[in-house]
Length: 459
Image (tube, rainbow, N blue to C red; front, side, top):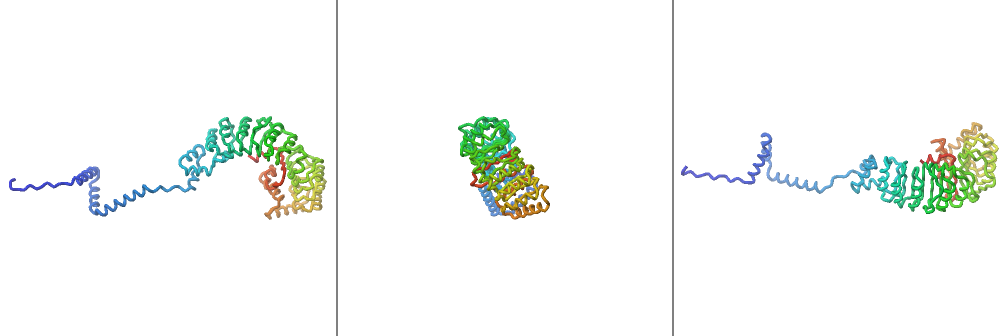
């Protein structure tokens, strides 16, 4: 109409309009009550508070991005790894990060690999190969499981140029020779269950070993043992052959000229060079021994163990003449001796301990030992039914008092170790496991086993 002024159209802010449009689009699917509540809350909030909240939120987000998540403790991680199989789970864990690699190798170092440990025990041959590859040629000690080795395993073993100790089961001759020829640092070789192994010689270019254990080697001949001893030379300190039925006493000629410490299954004859420096002689369970060589002189012999042998009174008389320095004599379960033999052995006036367990001696033997051996302070008379109850009570109480004192002498420790092992298994001989009785200055130490007891205990 004429005369009326037009009202100017309000100019809308494009930003607010667009925001309202977006909010309206976003609120299309939201209930009306919720929309009204949001608007009331936004109207109450001042711009300053809104800006403050926004700034704080941004700063908090920035701090979260810059900070690292907290790590598990090493104790927790080790416990988790303990439940993992080495192959393949543990190997996968080692590839995740350096931290887990370090923790895993602290528990299972690459320098030692013992497959007889439960966490490392493999189920397949390829698992053994993977663990050998994991070592990265840094192994110093390797104990393989009871599996049949193949050429691929041996190829990985000979790559371990730092290998010092090697133990395996039922190996082939070509694999043994390959290892002893190509591992320059090898010092200890132990082979178990090698009953099918036939050795006629030892390779001349083999490494000089320090310790050799061949358990169940009934096919090893004198020629093979002699060549092994000659190749190792003066480096060889200990050699053990169990069930070596093909060996005879001629092997001692090479042993006496090349070795410093000898452990053998059977003993028939020792060369004259060995007798003069012998201090410890163990002939336990050698049923063929009933006497002792008269021409032998054992001036330094201090420990003589004749348990479960057929030694008789004449043999004890011969011992009393050739072993003046004898201090410890063990005659457990020697049924062929009597009071006459013990009375004769009482001439060894340096005797400190005498073990007569399971022998048919009487009080006469004890009186003879007490009268002629001033250093005697311990006699074992368990299962000696011919000895009076009074004497048994006397010496049993003396043994209990000595063992309870705690501070044992040298030969008392040997006796205590034997008694402890008998409590675990009465069928086991004990002198093979005793380390306290050997002296640093002893030139030779000979231990003999008629049966495979040493092999069973080692496994």
